[in-house]
Image 1 (cartoon, helix red, strand yellow):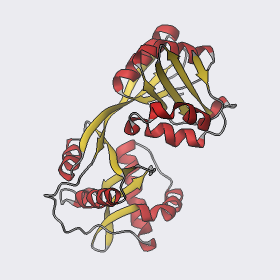
Image 2 (image 1 turned 180 degrees about the vertical axis):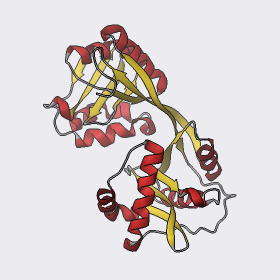
Image 3 (image 1 turned 135 degrees about the vertical axis):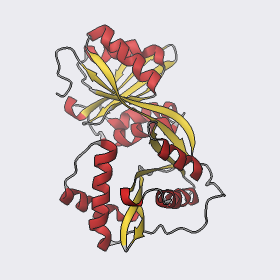
Image 4 (image 1 turned 180 degrees about the horizontal axis):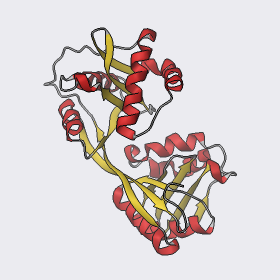
Length: 280
């Protein structure tokens, strides 16, 4: 069976027990589906399920974000065929690497085209802060006077970590609303290291936008911002988690030292249908 849902909330209601099996792997399903009020316009996205013999495979794409997958690899072929038959488009895929690669191989077999890996990550979680960490911390909540330095750091983060250029004015406007979510450390009176709480739900909260100005790295500043946010999240009775690039050994060591442990791998892939240019 292949189900196409009319809206994200309908998808969540029908598949909540499946998604709750591993909330850290399915967090983007909850976030994106809640925003998807209708799937009548294919440009807005889609939410589908392939189901057979008690097994299921879920797929959801919202706007320009990657299509996310979760479920049984044995249903990759029916999912690929169902998307193709209904002309439901996607380009990027985000999921556990084995699942994504199996699915994309089915797409290539059924439709042609090609795919490549964009990035490989790990989801890390922290159930308890490392008790050996220094108790003193300089991390603090930024104020409005910190906006210029915060915007500059956030812009550098997007460029360095994600390869995305940022509009400084738009970034400053966004930061004005998000300042309470950030923690920062100053040097010479100016913010030089930042981290942010993101994707906060009833039981989870992510730590993201971790960035230290290159001139101040190696001084333990990122440890202070991340540890401060992590402890706050734990104090709220929620589970802190974050994504780390496998190619970044410094970040991996930092998060492990704070108390984070590996939960599951994640991969992001680009699928290029036959006749398409990769950059289109």
